[in-house]
Amino acid sequence: MHAILASAVLLILCPDRTGLVARVSTLLYEHGANILHADQHQDSEAGLFFMRVEWALDDFDLDRFLAAFRPLAAALAMTWRLESSRQPLRVAIFVSSHLHCLADLLFRRRTGELTCTITSVVSNHPDAGDLAAFHGLPFHHVPTTGGNREAVEARQIALLKAERVDLVVMARYMRILSPAFVDRYPSRIINVHHSFLPAFVGARPYHQAFERGVKLIGATSHYATATLDDGPIIEQDVMRISHRDRVDDLVEKGRDLERVVLSRAVKWHTAHRILRYGDKTVVFD
Image (cartoon, rainbow, N blue to C red; front, side):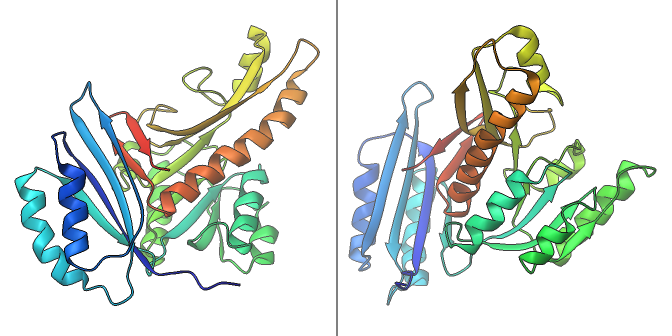
């Protein structure tokens, strides 16, 4: 197996103007950066520019580069962040009784497809305990019946703090998080919804799709916000169905879509390929 090259990733959002790519790339060149990947996007209607650039960290002086970059960023009104592959994101997975998305994420992490550290599995049901144990992960059973939501979320937040979690993944966690919880982790909670949003929000989208007689079903991964199933969309996929399919068929076929769109979203987030702006996201190649 080849060693993974340590790299830095710079993500930039700023007002669009000419020469932005040249100014950033020239500065990196002047500091000896070996650029591994670069991508950019312009939103002409919003007048915004987006950029992602990744370079090797071997023998690269980050402090010296940042000392030169910060004045440039301020002059160009940049919103930016710098990430490093030397510090993989720490991820907690929330799940209820449907385990297919959890199993998929854990498998992808074990095979190296996901470059993150999964800290634990948190669930309001005991069902996922054996799966977490198989993968050598702590399992936290936090029941949500018979208790108030504030107490439940206080316990969950305490767990996330103790484990220094960077990202929460709701892998079919079928409970609504409070606005206060979501506000603690802006753009750091990824949910998967079993429909092609904005169609069929709520807990029973396959039943709604069946009642409407749709010919396509879908799944959506998005950042969670205080509004149910309404956060910025990261990834979506669809599958054709027919009048012969019953609700159970839709549920079975939809599971594959749910796995794929959630794993893609987690992979892109942990690889620092997503920039959120307003109700949208830019996902870099």
